[in-house]
Length: 211
Image 1: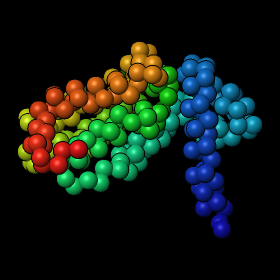
Image 2: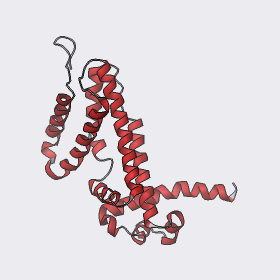
Image 3: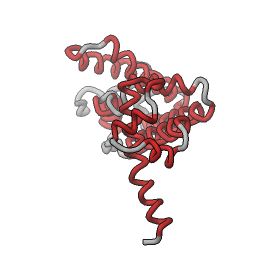
């Protein structure tokens, strides 16, 4: 293996590892306290190695947002909504979007830290906009499918997708502060019912195999 290729492969392995450690440091220390030195100590490596890959903490933050966006993108690609029957599919989709797996994809405290950076860092702001645009596009496609099947009366699927993204993200943050473990499932079901009402969901007729 030639040297440039080896260096590139090493970077492909080490950079995600460093970014994951950076993220965990943000969770524990906040964005202001997540220094390159602390990340290096967590990994038991020299800070110069992190500087070699990222140069600055700002560059590392930008790449961390990219990493998280890619994680969300992979989750979107792998959402397990396999039902073709529209009624089954919409219930399964909402089950996934309000699942613990989705809620725990990232840590709420770190989300707040990175969102705060987006207000004063234009590149990070654009990255978050891109993330939510991806999410909205995915949801709008699903909503259009349900509209074509005649099971919802949502109007403009793009607008409804934006509202749905707001509800999902609001749920993630609200749940952390106000919903305890014992009432978590009840709250999830209430959120799903609220979404179905908002979309003008038309349930199966009695005797048509409604689950």
